[in-house]
Amino acid sequence: MKKTSRKYQAILGSAKELFWKHGLKRVSVEEICHKALVSKMTFYRYFDNKTELAKAVYDQVVDEGIAQFKQIMSDKETTPEEKMQKILQMKMEGTNDISSEFLQDFYNRPEKGLPAYVEEKTRLVWKEIIKDFKIGQRKGWFRKDFKPEAFFIVSTKISELLSDPAMLHMYATPQELVMELAKLFTFGIIPREEGAMSSKG
Image (cartoon, rainbow, N blue to C red; front, side, top):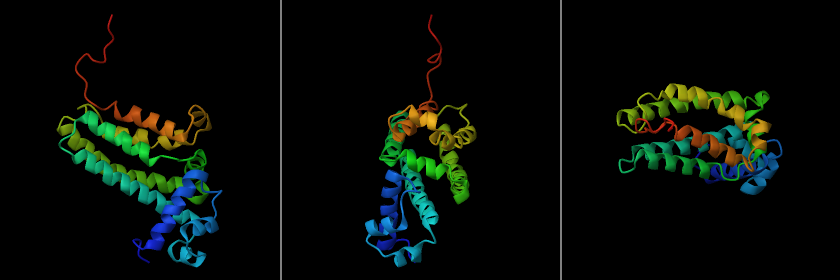
């Protein structure tokens, strides 16, 4: 079955919207089919089960994000600060309407294999991101002492924070937590003038 078909994309789009709002456990295959205007027979032509659909939704979101990231990084007309602002904007738009139920379900369900899937996908994606960061370092966009590989290791711990009830409780929405973590990441790697970080007496 072609992944570019209208019905396939309708299932993905409907599942993403429902998962974002209600999480995985609370959404049934029947509800996804109803929203996508397809039959269950059509659903099972494309996906073995709801977990495989969740992986496909995740892949699509990540792949779209990487394409946008590469476009931002390759833009020669923007400053490092502007690049970071665009990356944050992209992150914000990508997490609109995401629910705490989704974060809990997706990152905390080892029995479904989802955390392991996310970990492997993240590792592959970061290989590409690290290449772009190193190019940016050579061009002076990022600090010379910044280690993209260490950045990756820290990023792998983010899923733990996103599913931590104590962390989620501190913010009005999961999106606010995601954006807070994204800001901590992005603005810490932009070059600063000598002495800019030192305290003044």
